[in-house]
Length: 230
Image (tube, rainbow, N blue to C red; front, side):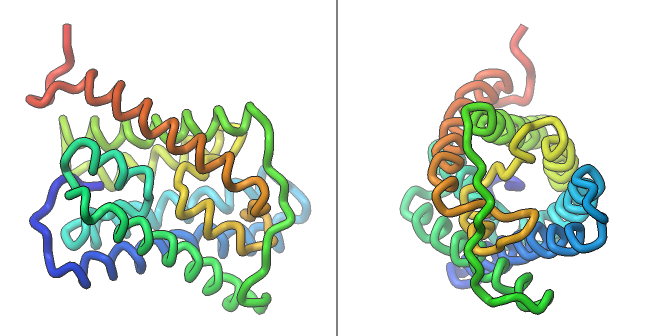
């Protein structure tokens, strides 16, 4: 997510993607469980309690793991970087597998920390065109933060991504999953943050559509030299 980096030992890069995604999902799910328990039935308060830790942990994870793997933690981001030749195509599948494994591990860790079954399939149905559109928009915005940051201020990318996800939690109807691996992980939490397995495929398809649209638009908008077309 912080741009092309020299390829380190493959084991280190894949470990970073697995651990980073796991900690991201553990934060999303864990804060969702805590929010549900403490918010007293207020969905707005629960969402706020879920939002702030997610945005914060993204800044930390991208900063510390970016130099190791690029800190994608997101198959949609890895796909876009592979299509834009910033990630070797042969490494894409390994990254996606590592991220999805991390998503499952993160949900399991959050469940364990809150005394819940290790694997608990969500029953929370999330379906409808407005939610799928929201997911596509969230991914387009995420890629805008990445491409814009790389064009104009690479050191700001961790903060830009964290702030973007914090914002899209609130202005999208879907609360911005924006990540196939996170969507996969959230299937294993029957909490405020969960998504029923039957609802997940449409979310993932919407996220991939958003990734392709975002790649086309932002790559056109930001020239290789970092300027904006007149």
